[in-house]
Image 1: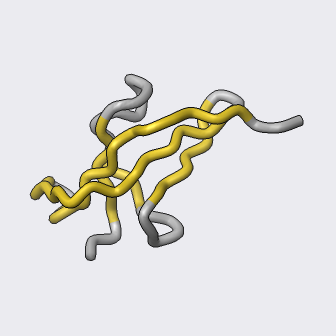
Image 2: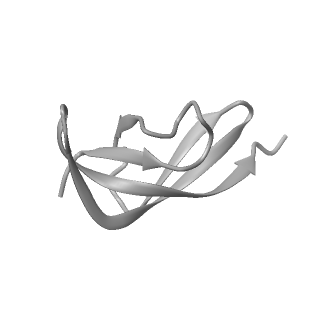
Length: 66
């Protein structure tokens, strides 16, 4: 398993970025503009400048509860 994720889909300012997988698992929850962008792990990998990364696909946005 890799320790970095390539983000696929979602907001333009996140799509295509390579980010750390924290905490390790099947989903990533990334804070952005008063909410969270949720990405799910796929079975695909890509070789990037950062090394071999797992592709995570965007699946939903949730708002921060007040």
